Image (tube, rainbow, N blue to C red; front, side):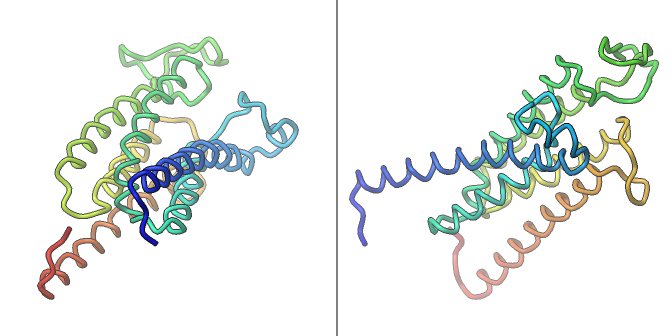
Length: 224
């Protein structure tokens, strides 16, 4: 069915409203669910108490899944759309980590004697610790600008999203060495394990797109 200009515009608006809702609702719900798996009691007693904490990766994975389903249902290119959305997600992480720093919510690092170490009023420890939320915020801010650069120059769908997965996953993996989190497998924290899968996913996307480009070139097709 052919859609006129107004109808097509309305359809796009509806799609972006749905994507925004899926990102916000899926992000909040997924973040809470992953944290509830780790600490069930405070979360199930009062599921709407945001002070009980949330897990970023749970929100990211859930929101990405919901957005992907919506894009498939709408028949919209998935990787191309994720490329457009992910810089905003990365910028949201910057503000989120600054918020963590200002609230002193417990995601700080191990004790340190570096000059920029901070003492938390909410902690039982009175020694300076690494301000790891600021380390992450700074990393994500640099990644955000890198994504904008790539978005302007991309030639294949999925490059920006895959680059985010690799860069953000690496940033979190490295910062985890300075955070006080339990090691669950092979000396790695939960976040490091998820980061590893995120990095691997980005590398797979880039590899598949490179193979696709070579096959198209061999077949005489020009990429869009």
